[in-house]
Amino acid sequence: MTETGDRSQRHRVRMQRKKEIVDAAIARADHTKGLLLVLTGNGKGKSSSAFGMAARALGHGMRVGVAQFIKGRSDTGEEAFFRKQANVVWHVLGEGFTWDTQDLERDTETARQGWAVVQTLLRDPSFDLIVLDELTYPLKFGWLDLNQVLDDLKNRPPMQHVIITGRGAPEALCNAADTVTEMADIKHAFRAGIQAQSGIDL
Image (cartoon, rainbow, N blue to C red; front, top):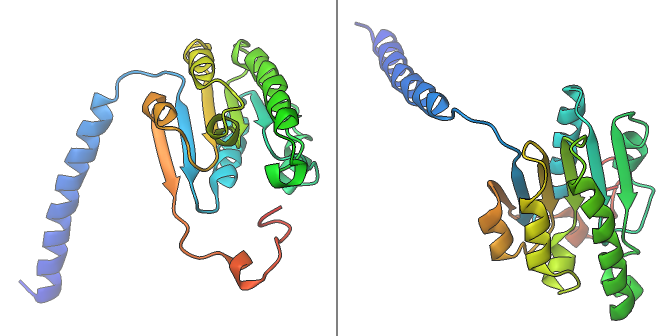
C-alpha cells in the first residue's frame, strides 16, 4: 500500500470509530426538556450568542421573549432587528450601567421591577425561549434574591428554554443550568483605543 493509501485507511478507521462514539452518545440522549443555559465569562460574545440562538428559534417558528437588565440604551442593532419580528417580545429593563446611574437604591428597585416583568414571561407557556440579558449583574450585586430567581426558573413551563448572559454568574446558577459556557477574554479592540463599532458591538 502506498503512503497516501495507508494514510487514507488510517483516517477511515479513525472516523469509523469516532462515528460509533458519536452515534452512541446520540442514542443515549433520549429525552427533551426546556434548557437553562448560562453564558458567562469576561470575553465578548455572550449576548451575541444568545441573540444568535434567538434567531435560530425564530427560524423554527418559536416565540421569543427578551428581557435586558442593566443596559438602558435602545439603539442596538439586535433590538432594531428583533423588534421587527412578529414572534418577539422585547423589554429593556435597565437604566444604564451602575457607573452611569450611581444610585444603589434606584438600581435595586429597577432590577426588582424588571424581575416582576420576567416573572410574567416565565409563567407564560406561549414563550418557547426567553433571553435574560445581563441578569448576572443584579444577582452579583444583590439587587435580586438569588433563591427567588432560581425558584422562578425551576417552576417555569417544562419546555421553555431560558438563556442567561453576563459576567460572574453565581455558582448556584451555574449548578442549576443545563449548559454553561464561559467566554474567555484573550484580546479586545477597545483596549487599543478603538470605539465600539455598529454591527459588531452595538
